[in-house]
Length: 264
Ligand SMILES: NC(=O)c1ccc[n+]([C@@H]2O[C@H](COP(=O)([O-])OP(=O)(O)OC[C@H]3O[C@@H](n4cnc5c(N)ncnc54)[C@H](O)[C@@H]3O)[C@@H](O)[C@H]2O)c1
Image (cartoon, rainbow, N blue to C red; front, side, top):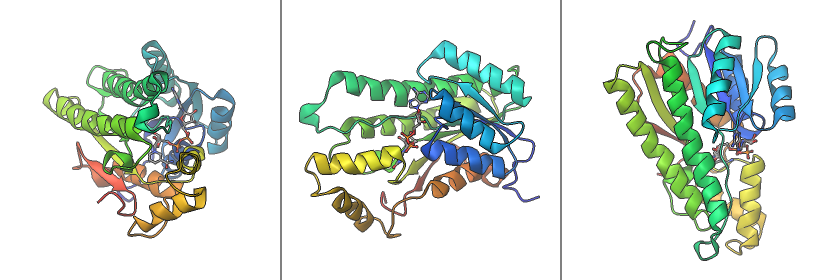
């Protein structure tokens, strides 16, 4: 057994019906974990859980809903027979220049990205700390973005929410340590990856006139990336497996760039 092996571990991944979350759920399952796919998209989420095989499950979860979290995480822990890993991946991105920011869209991003991740940490702690229904400790992995480490036009509020996730991660790791929860908390900063969100962002960059075309937007990002390409879902998923596993046992309160060097 390597220290990346997750056999016997139980994981919940939010926003796992598509995109990066789907890839994270697949990679965790391949590493041996049993996975609860959590999302607002019941049809797609159910299909992803079924595709992982027997023992894996889908739970409906709107990450902005505190009571929904309590119910979904309880159901997941009961069906899986415990909980060791929570991946707060669900997020939304709505592109806008600051001069055109729509308050409702800004609030939506703050709600899903910041409140949703905060509630995910809250309920992960309550479940995995001593006395919780899965009280042997565990791991929380949050999904920030390269947007938290660079200044890119058109994604001001989104970038602010991702910087907030970075800071939430540090405070959460400190609280967990000080209060003896036994839960490590880290985050990743994915680079631009062509999921539905990533493709939408590249299209928006062209629509806003920041780049001449979608292709020029992609080329612009690649030009800023030492590794010379966009991200792939598997790049992010493998980083999550590392942070979920004992291979990262002394990594805590950290943010791991998985961006080919774009944000250095
Ligand atoms: N794709 C990229 O280029 C990129 C880069 C950096 C960071 N990220 C971050 O990675 C995460 C995943 O992004 P993605 O590209 O897979 O996006 P995506 O839009 O393809 O998928 C997001 C998933 O989150 C779910 N979701 C949205 N709101 C939710 C809510 N309130 N409750 C539960 N689920 C909800 C959606 O249903 C969807 O399944 C996000 O946090 C995003 O900000 C993405």
